[in-house]
Amino acid sequence: MPSEEERPADEVLPWDRRFRRGLRTYRAAISIFVLAVGFLLTILALGAFTPLSMSPPFNSIDSSTDTPAANYNLVFVIVGPILIILGGYLVGAYFTARRRFDHLMLTKSKAEFLRNIPEVEELLWDLTPADQLRYEQKLADLRLRR
Image (cartoon, rainbow, N blue to C red; front, side, top):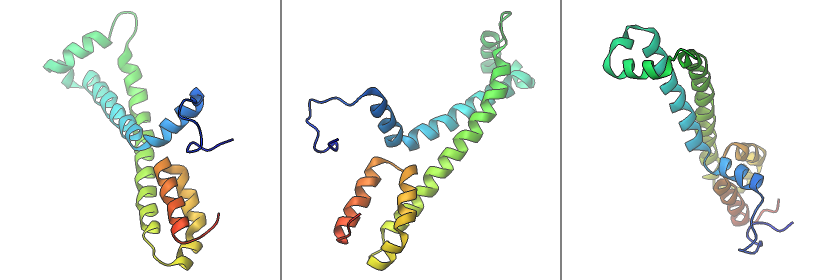
C-alpha cells in the first residue's frame, strides 16, 4: 500500500483512517478539551448540590437540567469527575511523552540515539504524525536505516 506521500492527491482515505489520523494529530487539543468538559460538568454538579444553586448563573442552569422527567445533575456528578481523571491522564501522558521525546531528539550522538531508539518508538504511540516525520528525518540525518 503506498504511503501518504506517494498517494495521488485525488484519492480519499477511508473514514476510519482519517478519524484515527485526526485523533493522533489533535491529541493534545482533544485531551485538554476532555479535561475542560470534565471540570465544567463538575462545576455544574457542585452548583446544583451546594448553596451555589441559589446564585444567578446556577439557578437558571439548574432549572433547565433538573426537569420533572430527568435530573441531569446526577449525570454531571458521575461523568464530571470521570472526565477529569481521564482528561488529566491524557494531558499528563501527552505532555510527558512530548517532553521526553524532545529531549531524546536533541541528541547529537549517534550512539546515544541508537541506544534510545526503542524508547523513542514507544513514545511515538503517544505523539502526533508530525513527530513521526521528525523521527524519520533524524534517522536520515544520522544515516540510519530502520
